[in-house]
Image 1: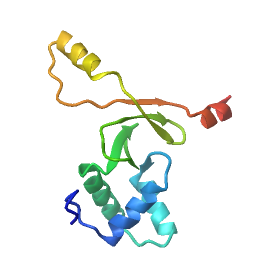
Image 2 (image 1 turned 60 degrees about the horizontal axis):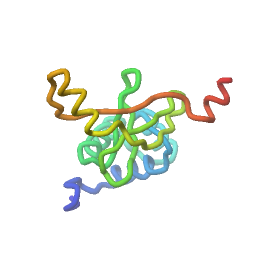
Image 3 (image 1 turned 90 degrees about the vertical axis):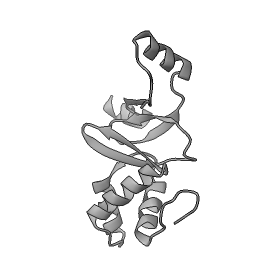
Image 4 (image 1 turned 90 degrees about the horizontal axis):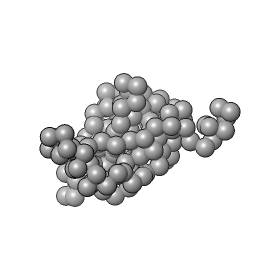
Amino acid sequence: MTAATGVRRTAQKAAIRQALDGKDGFTSAQQLHAELEAGGDRVGLATVYRQLNALTAAGLVDAITVEGEQLYKACGDGAHHHHLVCENCGKSDEIDPPSEEWIQAAAAARGYTVTRHVFEVFGLCADCARIAR
């Protein structure tokens, strides 16, 4: 276990993390599993899911749900952030969300107390938009 994250280091986790680090966008556990297998890494699909969930819980990987499917991406320093995500290729960029003040004010005006928030914006990246034209 590393003291900073509380996550055990294993060869399988390292292979999964390395595969995620090489991606520009979000990917599914199934896609990641297929890429690992094609690259010669013998990792079961259940292990990929388990490791992705552990990395997500530790704040080392971001997870979003798109059309009912969980997608994963290794992100920077673990600081709270949000994404602009291409619905076609999965490419993503980190973006600044509306201000915390706006979120709190919108919630308070409706009688809510904010406990957490998720903010992702979906569309087509420049390359996919160009192809779609």
